[in-house]
Length: 266
Image (cartoon, rainbow, N blue to C red; front, side):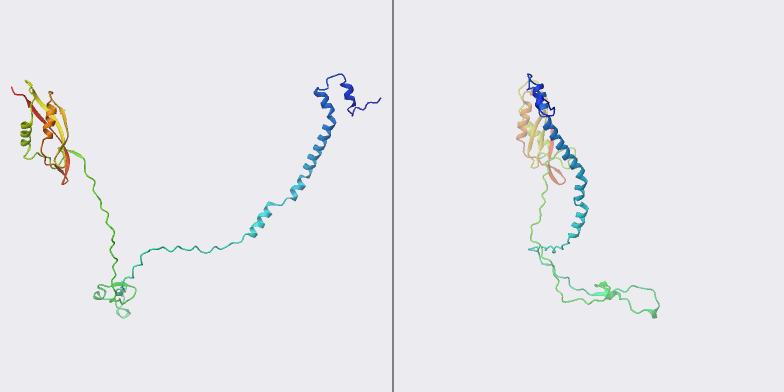
């Protein structure tokens, strides 16, 4: 029996008694069909590569398309934009009345016989305008005056000055009614000294004299104990109104400080 190696009959003889599920058997069995497919695909790719220049030659040129497009552009003139009429506009003011105008002749140095036009005299140009030609005004023209607006004028309110000034740079210092001697007399009369033997010293207090003369922000800077500071605050709260300090012609807040001498009865 003659065996053709180009057929698949010899595979059964070679792989007889062997494991045909092995990959070599399948590869050899499909070898013919694989070679045929490869040959067909290669032929198609080769034919496409050879015909590529011909295909590119059949495609239209892009530059020709641009020229054709340019020839088809037509300029269109749009209609003018309509202007919106503004409403509620005030009427235009009337033209000013005509005023007598005298022609101004530029002075030129020339001989008497060459003068063709005399310049105007001083009396002629008084209360008149100078122009390129002489114009007669309208003496009966009505003088128009724009009406005065009815709007309310803006009122600028000055911010209140709440700065606390010191007595060193104030124009007018605050003062107790009747003077400082009266103030020390008031403190001495109303101050109750603690009943502590040998108590002696000074209580330093500070307070703000307001614009209305009242005393606020009363503080004890230093005391000698035994309730002397609290008593000083109590007395100052009973104080009558002072004359406020003045700066730039207006009452201002002023910081005041003073010592109160304490001495118990022996």
